[in-house]
Length: 102
View 1 (cartoon, rainbow, N blue to C red):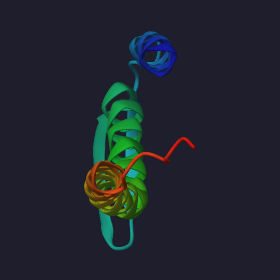
View 2: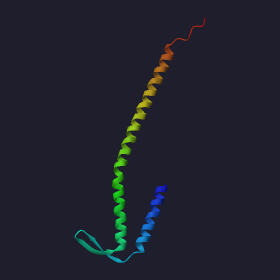
View 3: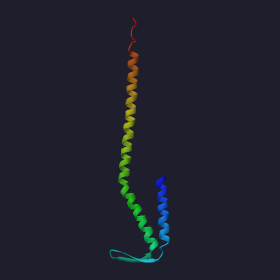
View 4: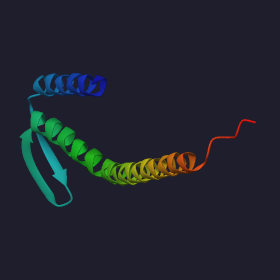
């Protein structure tokens, strides 16, 4: 929840900064050159940064998801093994006669 609040605050700060810088600028990229508003450059750069961060974190998220699935499967197998052992213990205690008092 705190991450969402921080992201919202940063988004609002970026929007406020962009809206205060409305003058036209010339953007040059390799052989391209065009005039646009500084607001679009700021918001476009922030958006591109968000996309890049998402793509960079995707590998870790997928790996973590795979690990979680594997651990859940292992935990379920262990629960089943415990049930089997408890059943064996119950059956063996039923077969064993009580000690003779003598």
